[in-house]
Amino acid sequence: MEFSIKSASPEKQRTGCVVAGIFEGRKLTEAARAIDAASRHFLTGVLRRGDLEGKLGTSLMLHHVPQVPAERVLLVGLGRERDFHEMAYRSALAAAVKALRSTGAAEAMLCLTDLPLKRRGTDWKVEQAVLAVMDGLYRFDRLKSKPPEPARALRKVTMHVPARNDIAEGTAAIERAAAIAEGVAFAKDLGNLPSNICTPTYLAEQAVEMGRNDGVRVEVLEQKAVEKLGMGAFLAVARGSREPLKFIVMEYRGGKREAPPVALVGKGITFDTGGISIKPAGEMDEMKFDMCGAASVLGTMKAAALMKLPINVVGVVPATENMPGGNAIKPGDVVTTMSGQTVEILNTDAEGRLVLCDALTYVAKYKPAAVVDVATLTGAMVIALGGVATGLFANSDPLARELLHAGEDAWDRAWHMPLWDDYQEQLKSNFADFPNIGTRAAGSVTAACFLSRFAKSYPWAHLDIAGTAWKSGPEKGATGRPVALLAHFLARRAA
Image (tube, rainbow, N blue to C red; front, side, top):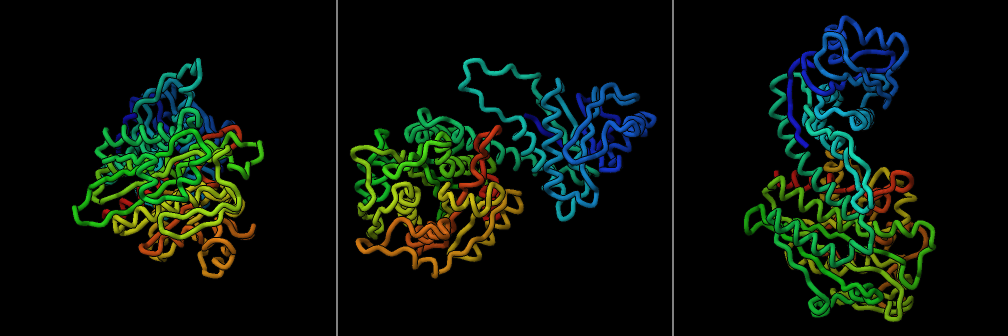
C-alpha cells in the first residue's frame, strides 16, 4: 500500500475516489463544500433528497459528479459536529475504508484527515488513517482452499491536509504508522493461525525469520538450556505437551552500546486447554489466541526495527502448550522457579503466570531500564474492562504513566489497576512460598501480584490483554493489540 500527503484542492483531483465528510443536519465539511461548489451544488441536491443525513458511520457513494474529475465521491457521515472526537473520527475512517474496499477504485484521496479535532494534530489524524486503512484491508484467508476473489485492490491512498506546512508532519506520521501497521499485521497473522500450525517451534521460526529480515538478533533456547537455567515453572507447564518448548530471545540494538534496554516479555502459550484443570469445551478454539502476548512482542520488535528507533530493546517469549497428559503438572504439585522461590500449583489453568515468572527472572540479567510483560492472563480482566481497555499494573507509577500516555497517543488505551500490598494477602500456601492463584475475588489483581514477586529489581509493568487481544463472534480474530501502544511507548523513550 502506498500512502502520500497533499494539500491540493479536493474538487480538482483526478483519482478513483475522493472521500469527504458530512455532519448530521446535512452540514458539509470544507472539502465537501469545495466539491459541492465545483459541481454546481450537486451534493446539496442529493442530500436534500434525504439520501444521507450525516449519521455517524453511514456512507453514500456518488459516481460521475458533474465538473469533478474524480471517478467517485464518497460521502461519509460524521455524526453531530459538537460530538466529533477521536472515536467518531475512527468510526468515520472505518466506514470510509469499508466502502472503498467494495469499489474498484485503485486510488483514493481521504479528506477526513483535514477535519479539526480537539487536542489532536495532523500527525495523529494521519497515523490513525493509515492504521484504519491497513486494518480495513487486512484479511486472513490463507488457509482456505479457495480464497475469495479479491476486488481490484486499493493500492494508493492520499491524505488531504489543510496547508502545505502540514505535509512534513503528515509524511513523518505515515512512515511511523506504516511501521506500526506492519507490526500489527504480523501479530494478527500469528494470533489467527491455528495451534496445529503455530506451534512453539513455528513461533521460534517466525522470530528467526523476522530477525533475519529486520536486523534483530534472535536466539532460541531449547529444553536443555532452559533446564540448566533452572526455569522450573516454565518447564512444569511444558511437561504435558508433546510439542517441544522454545524460549525465544530477541535483541534490537538501536541505541548506544552501554544503554540499558527496555525488555518486553510475551506469554507464548500456543494453545491452552487448561491442563489437568481443563477448560469447558465452549469457545475453547479461541485458546489458540493465548499466545497473543508473544505475538504482540514480536510485532513490536518488528515495528521498532522498521522505525529504526534509537533505543535498545530485548524481547523474550517463553513458548509452549498447556496440555493434559500423563506427565502434566497436577493441582497440588510444587515447583521451584528460576528465582529460587517455590510455587504450589492450585490450578493448572493459571499457567501464564508460571511461564512469565521465569522469563521475568531471566531478563534481570540485562539490567533493564524497564520491563513490560504482555499476556492474555485472566478472564477476570475481561469481566472488569471488556474489550475496550487493556489492564495495566505496575510497581512504578512513572512507568505506568508512560504506558498510559503511550496508549492515549496510539488510541490503544490501557487502564491503571491497583497493585496494593493488601491483595498480596491472598497468596498464601501451607506447602510452598506461595500458590499460583488466590481466591476468585480480584483475580486479575492477584495474578499481577504473583508476577510482581519476580520483578522487584527493576521498574516493571504488566499488561493483561485478555479482553483486547482478540474479538469473538462474526468478526472473530486477533486485533494486534497492544503493538501500537508498545511502539509509541518505545518511540517516546527513544526520543
